[in-house]
Amino acid sequence: MTFTPKGKADPKQQQEAAAALAVTALGFIAGEPERLGRFLTTTGIGPESIRAAASEPDFLVGVLDYLVSDEELLLAFANENSFDPAHVASARDILAGPPVRD
Picture: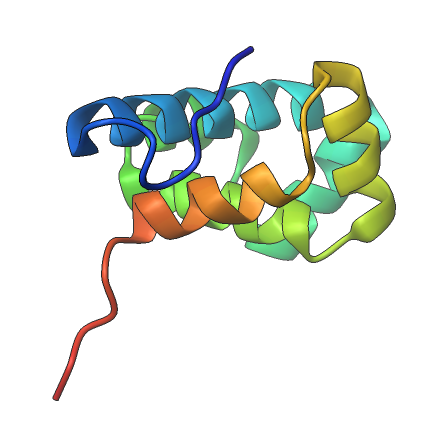
């Protein structure tokens, strides 16, 4: 998988790449029953809802938040996919969009 951090591609390409990274992360989490069980418990989502939720940007942000919150899991994911772990945080920021100002 190739991911281009912020500033290296147009915004639509960034969004698509960030979403693809998040879907890959979800597949990585779902690929091992223990990982998936922890994810489901932490997020409160049911296994029957994952497929539909995966198309929602907010859910994908949550997937990346979950991954970033566990350094060991993050490093395993990054190593398996041959990219810098910092790209996960960049993808999360791209999907989340700019902060809302009051």
